[in-house]
Image 1 (cartoon, rainbow, N blue to C red):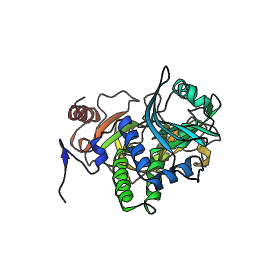
Image 2: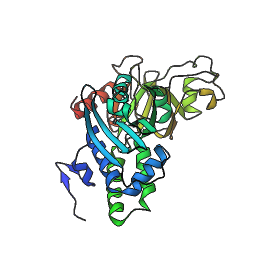
Image 3: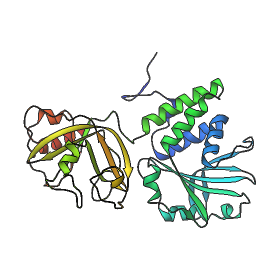
Image 4: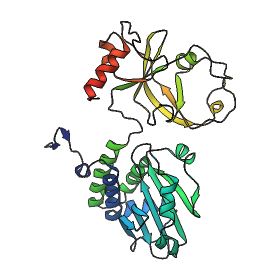
Length: 324
């Protein structure tokens, strides 16, 4: 099959031609919902448990209200439901003030629809978002969906779609699948973190044995310089050198470590990533830390960890390649 490139990037879906910004993704999803009835039906049945007729549904993009800004997507059926969808790319969420603007739009307040919802659509898992978003704003329920949910709704709708609908959903899922950053499977960047020699407070297993024995690692989701999106690879350093590199096979977001570790006390955390680590591997030669702060976390391209003598050298070479 003939390949199409835009500059140096292969285009595998017509939606890629729109772009990869938040509005571009919103437009693509809205187009899919409007052109594929089975997709819209699956979305509504999951989002608001609506199983009625969708023949008169209206979908609006970038609907403006003076003083209240633009909405990403609105889906409405006269006298039945009115949904305002705020879409975010990555692990970003709207502010309470932004949701307040949507919830207090005059036409939204005056709407006679018995079902009104604010739906936040982002990369975030529900567990993560629930800790950072209000349950309701101005009396309007706030629901949480992820791009992964939309991707799955599209797959579910495929079998009941027309031939044209199936082609569209395949294009859309190719596009969405390339954008979902919950784990960047094509990334060779390694997140290098420092590991102490002691124990987490109140735990009966050391930091290092959590990695070596349990093949796990955890850290807060964002805040204090921690990443908000899980990396593909993670590496650990201590005793002045690189110790091991691991592929992150899977991850989940946790708030109670005792449910996952018998050695942990019962306590409530802020949402944290729990990584399930693949087998350890490392360069044959010793890679010393170099000039990195004792607790510093850095990014290094995987190959640089095998060609550089220090982690700081690998970090600098990675920055140079990335143009930073």
